[in-house]
Image 1 (tube, rainbow, N blue to C red):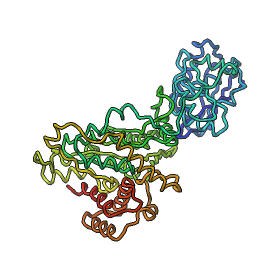
Image 2: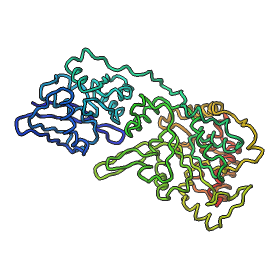
Image 3: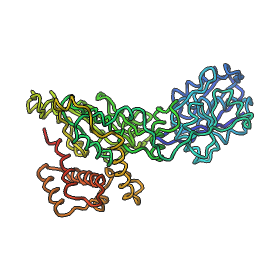
Image 4: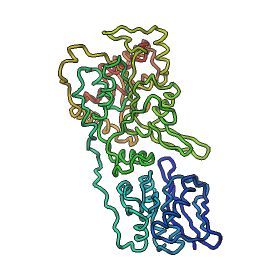
Length: 512
């Protein structure tokens, strides 16, 4: 007898509907899997056989042919364990096949019949809803993730016996009720509450840069000697960022679901991501890759922060991978079999010492590096990469009296209010630009429309371009930063003081 069960496979952050056809017929006992399965699916032959026996079902001692359609799509992962098991049970007439065409089945199955969570459930649920699938049958740990998609019935099962009972007696089961999901994610993470800007002593210039970066989504680098507070400042940036909107949260959740980071973690990613890879990270781990492409750190930081501590310790060729995503907001991973696009619209925050010994320009300790050593040290950061960093801030060590005093700066909550007001002001300006969310993402046509300069501001910018040797890209980024500074000040037009403040953040890449 032939049975067809529906499942799905992940391609990038999207899903493709996959048919699992199971034919049980006469012949020598054995299982053959067709349709470009990977090793995990090939191993499911023995896994499913033991599972059915241990769960109390009869395994048909006949020839079983399993065909995964479409045949030209490479399938991977253990999520096909459940549809294969259900297909064998339906083909051997141990469960009813009436509902198989209306539902999509996903789960890894352990040897005792327990259903285990799998990755990529949210994009699969979204695809199933768009294709008119009535519902999903998933493990308990994936139920809330799938239930985020409105209008899709999600049934959570603990084991294979629950699935069989659902197919035979569907009236006894009710779909999972999703947790309350707000269309704005205002909840702060525990980590954001623990690290607060009020703990930072002094560093008014760096705090101002953080506020501008959060308001406009601008890339930022801190340069200073050891112990000046570069990492401490960077780790407090998430606490002043505005909350994720509901569409942004859905997009971030899809990426994290594909990466397998949502298992046992609830339904929706509510906090802006903060990713901090070690400087030993490889290029593929940063941008994504693999024979079956998976998102890298820059995609996992989508709509959030990518923090690269000790930037000059990263390999230069690895850092060069960031240039295209910083400009375009996405990364394309091309392989022989397929090419996928991952979103990568993140804010880059970096920190580094000014030289190998760390004390070049320090007012307290003398630098021991030669000019040649400093030149070689900064050569790890290419000009095109530094061009893409809007805010370049020198962070000096605190004076003794500043170290001993109690922190008196503003809290993250106070700064976040101003950031939200600036973002709201920009959002009103971008009402007719649905894909534009912050000033850092403006294109040339937007600059012409919203960043016009008076004669004094234009002369100031032209002088800075000549004196600092800035590129056209760098000058555009000065205008974007100036637009953010004006938003924070509540001004509609750019003024000379806005442009002047933006220019002062473009000097660090010339200090060496």
